[in-house]
Length: 394
Image: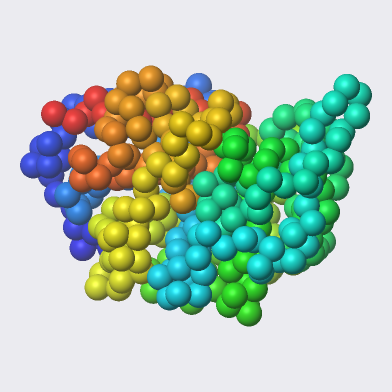
């Protein structure tokens, strides 16, 4: 049994070509040599066993070699964790995905949609309320202020609704004071939805998000290094990217806190390790349970990993690959072609702004996780990793 909670098995016994996995390592070493990233940490599992685990490069530019327990800023890979916590409440009968968000956060009862008319922004009433399902599948109409330059996105950016000096509750109230970019249920718009979902969880649980996640997920799954900050004693293990002004330009923090932050972002505030996130992904891959601990039922998890968009939802956003829909917290592959990488229909995944990513293929009984810190090259590493893993399958 490895430190990741899974047994190792020879790659060729589980349908992998050893030379293909060697090419994966070589390609990542080449990327490090080209200074695309300081270091990379990777894992592949199939049929409940680890077939590949490797790390290359350094922990930070000019720093020590990449280590087994490096801590990475995972940004939007926070979203699947928060979505699972919400579905645990659904399984307990304390939440319905059809519930209007205003049931838990009354300020959303008066929200409007901003429609551009000439040189003005016309505020129109909602055709229907935002639901919890809208939050989980990103059809709420909420947006990020750094993913575009529409009038609504400019307002979101100006309002600084991820202000680290405010609590999650206070930032979500600020979000509710702004217009939506779209009518609920009509467009897939990646944005602040999971932060609002996190606040719904806090309201139901009567506790801070960090407390809920520790009790429901991090403790039961033995995710000992996952948190919204890095304690001083662990800072030497934190991976860092090359110097870049991208993160500041995007208007988001760098998750550098060494003490519990005031704002716990459900959409992008967590840090984690390869081992911790592997245990979370293994739980998903194994149908909602790990090491005898049941987190979700298999049927609930299958529901989450199904496409919840359908043809009625417009999904031309640049962050959602062609041939994919979106479930409750994950992107879901709906077409064997049209995507930038090979894969199987039904696989589901997500990643973070710094390049961390995971995917699960139920059809192939496979999951993989990559941890990097490179905002500029995040798309490159996601596609490279996926292509080389697929090519290594016999």
